Image 1 (tube, rainbow over the protein chains, first blue to last red):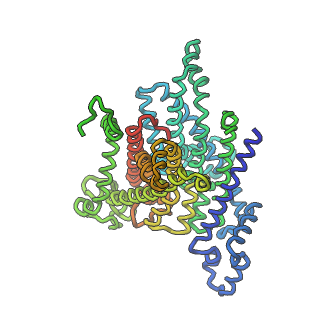
Image 2: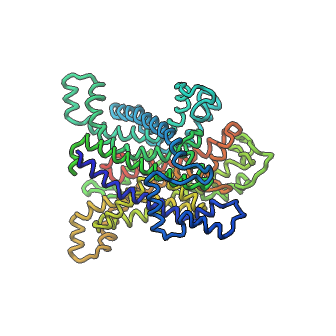
Image 3: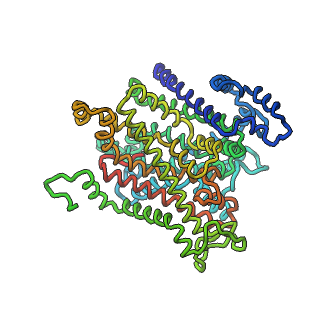
Amino acid sequence: MGRFILRRLAQAIPTLFGITLLSFVLMRLSPSDPVSLMVAGASDLSTEDITAIRQSYGLDQPLPLQYLSWLTHVLVGDFGQSFLFKRPVIQMIAAALPNTLLLASFALVLALSIGVPLGVLAAHYRGTVLDQVIRVFGVAGHAIPGFWFALLFILVLSVDFRVFPVGGMQTIGKDPWDLGDRLSHLIGPALALSLGGIANYSRYMRTEMLEVLGQDFVRTAYAKGLYQHSVLFIHALRNALLPLITALGGLLATLVSGAVVIEQVFAWPGMGRMTYEAARSKDYPIVMAVVLISSALLLLSYIIRDIAYGVADPRVRHR
Amino acid sequence: MTGPSPRVTAGLWASAAQRLKRDRLTLAAGGVLLVIAMLALAADAISDNLFHYGFTRQNLLDAYRPPTLLDPAFWLGSDDLGRSQVVRLLYGARVSLAVGFGAAMINLTIGLSLGLAAGYLRGWFDDFIQFAVSTLNSIPTLFLLLIVAVLFRPGPPTLVVILGLLSWQGITLFVRGQTLSLREREFVTAGRVIGASSARVMLRHILPNVLPLVFILSAIDVGGLILTESALSYLGLGISPPTPSWGNMLSNAASDLSKGPWLVYGPGSAIFVTVLCLYLLGDGLRDALDPRLTTTR
């Protein structure tokens, strides 16, 4: 097992390298270089001043050297300063990341706890109206733009019926540990974010369950007189869940991407919203740092997924 | 086609058509898409002759008019500048479909060539492609698009290219997998034995076997690309106003939700219906072409 984990970690190194290289190349390909963005608005700077600034940032060095020096800074967590806020980028990310993780993990829980039972039900009641409805939802939930669902949610439940707050993470002035208040702010964005995941999991689960339900051990379980729900949820579900670990990677990626838009709609103070605002004001030390950190996190979650798969299914370890 | 005679097994296309004929949902989805495409193509003629209203025409006196049946131009109401919502929806269809299909053509071309080459040649090229795919897949798509959109400030044609260049991983992996299994089949060995070059084997023997399923995958891809474009445009980084796209219309609607709630319904439903039909069509065609493949995705 230890060797399997080590091998999987080693495989991630070239990918991580590729991500940093791609980010760096994109940054340098940009038509406007960082210094001209930094000094935009400061018209009293002479050409010599600008050259001096370029030198102080090492921008007159050859590109491979620049990449290496940038990489060594990044490796110790130094992502530079935000152009706009003049604060170290790493501090800003440390403030926003937990909010996004909270939102994404709640969405993940929703996707699993709604999607999986839906799929099990659809498989069990195959061919009935219930199955049809769940299958239609399985495609439709995937086709609804999350941000549109979010707008409808706000329009109907927040503006018309005033059941949920319009946005933000908590009501200003309320006790930050008021869990009910926090939860009512969380439900809208998490639901909008998890819609695609719920749909995906219900489809995936239905197919897996259909396969498992046709196997001999399920018939045996019924034959020895077990209750229906214990056959379904204990015997069959456990065997159908395994391939779903694979689907988890894709879901995490969509959650991270989706958060950019959903956080914007609900004014959720997370990484997505910060990135979006940084992107609009061309504050790209922030954008670059966010891309690197979220990619690294995604890569880490892929590794954890593969290890979990290796734990669950010994055959994978020896491939 | 006279239908399969009982003694001869129907060919790939004939049996697919047979199965498709019974699949009403897929046919309906195809029909709706056809209507949307035709409306988009005829956007000029329709807005000139039916609505008498251009998509940029504005009149502040008509701002935030709720939907009404009395004036065709305001069937779906008007926005903050008094622009006709229904006319803008028509033109938005043009933009969204063009971006979706255009980008899909690009990623299809890239995916087919890279996938064929990686699967057939294997070796270092395959390793490199696998590396590139896993790298791109590890970066959250929207973040990557965000950087590129900010750095290059794309107009519609550039946006199509960027979307196409950043979304070829799925098709590449699929084609690679298919090619890996096809290259071990007898007809490929036979071709090699009589001296066909690698390029000839790839293009004349393997490609035709991969193509049908790849086109179907591509239909599903178009749906995903339309969703991505709408999200980008919603953020103000895709298609920028005054060119109407469903995404930027929603972004405009969101600026004051309570004043014109009807502005939210139209563009969103348009995206939803279009993408839904593309997904249904893709799934249905796949089932018709290869009934063994279940619709897991």
